[in-house]
Image (cartoon, rainbow over all chains, first blue to last red; front, side):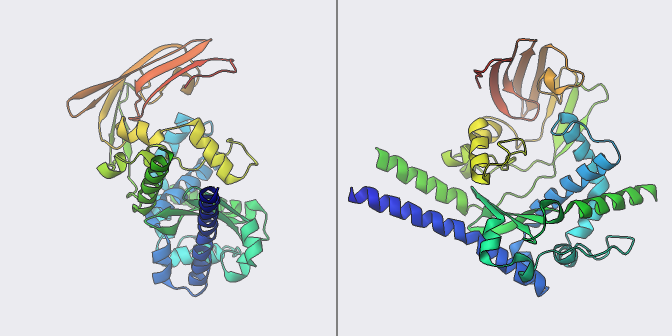
Length: 196
Length: 175
């Protein structure tokens, strides 16, 4: 009986520690973005994974916008995304430079990406996170995965859904689902670059 | 016995968390104009110590997140666990038995990049075969589909090793 209680308590404590752990990374990232601390952002972002996430998302929006998308999840759609990745590459390469990424997360206006002057979008900051309870309510935890939607008071289509991955004992930003409006703007930018 | 199992499980789980993320591969496919041959380049090999980790076998490095249609509205952890139960041993099938981290050429029934006829639009029925050629090995794949059933076995064009036997419209499905 003592063993059972001991093991159950240990597992509960371990799970609680695991559940709290990624929140520290979220707050550190928010502070780094707000302070425009490039070194800290570099340490908290898995750039290759983030690049993959942004590319797939922007290409899907572009294909949908131009009517070239196949059935969602189909082989044809996967191939179309693979081929479209080369079209989106120049824009995504600009997006994931540290300075542009800071702009993207902070106000949705990455420097040197948009040809027109676009209005800002509220992004990641201490204010956008609100209190711990609001962040918790807007987060989801899985096995080596953590997601949080920011700003916490915006509907899903108008918020960033940031994904964090656990590898090498560190949580890092590895995916970012952009607000619908921003996805469309980026897809339009690809469209313009194709017409030039 | 249970203590040993739990200790090993804990040990391999810690090893899984400790390993750094694998470099993202820049996989590129080239498909012949007739659709019968495809070749892949740019894949990054999985380290051997990952392939020897039984906990890692049960994870899914390539699709760790469940798709939107997997138990929508449920908490993420439930959706993720059910995703792993629905598609078990993905890393094992792709990287231990499979050749998902190797560059190779695959030759087979057109279009070679479709595993079963249901993946093709418009849907067809019948046999579909392919062979992966890697390091002098020939890894076969065969699938069959008609209006009542789908089955397949072997190394799919993507390098994944798997098998399936589904009776269409039946509540009981065999993986």
